[in-house]
Image (cartoon, rainbow over all chains, first blue to last red; front, side, top):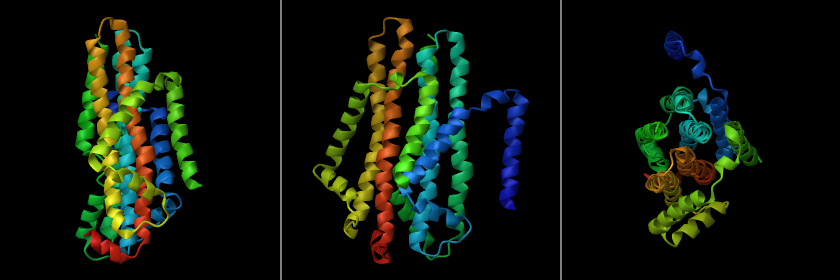
Length: 183
Length: 153
């Protein structure tokens, strides 16, 4: 019930903001959607193989051993990281296409804006779908010493720069592209 | 089998987006690839030396000795981070090269586009090659009994 209220609130907020600004058609981009879900499902099967299906069982069922805990938590953590990275990848791919194709300065600003939609999608998919599932697994776990396990999980999955570093970097690249291309 | 399907889905989705952006030729550049792999290889050798080969051989094995599990995870995390950072590093190197040789405004757009390719290669390499190997080791770690997990704490 709480989750339902949360999602409803979120969707209402976003829909309100998007439709009030009147640029709703700019926020729909099927290629970014395809890239993000393709990368997420592809990387899911590529990294976990047949175990991917067993990880999804723990959405509704509490984990009872360390083995199940590590499988479920690293699975959802990896998917949320992948969604963010796929968003950044989509932004960069469309900025590259824009820089190679666009000739006049007036076209550059809308194209840059459209390229950032991919980043938004990736971040939303990560933080609204996979991160709640991960927190769900941690919250419902029925094993002792959960803090030690979480710390161990963080230690052995320390494979990405901080999200804030990535976001700051994406902002720098975006500004750089706009600045250089508006010469 | 599932891993092949996953690889195919990843490559297909990236290829569709590339095709929609205007052809594959735009996204291929050999010097960029060389720069990225050079920096990554150098960082790996500086960090781990001869052990690099050992850990990559370890990834192919079915049964990994329990004392090697956490160091191997750490190694692949290190390479994954290193690839992203070397993409960023290569981006700045090529941006400097482009801006120093700046003569014509019309050539600037495509030249900057090539510099962005560094980061794209870094992300793809990290998430399609290194991360699956790391998670394979993680799954291998899950199959050993809980006595090894106590060592990790």
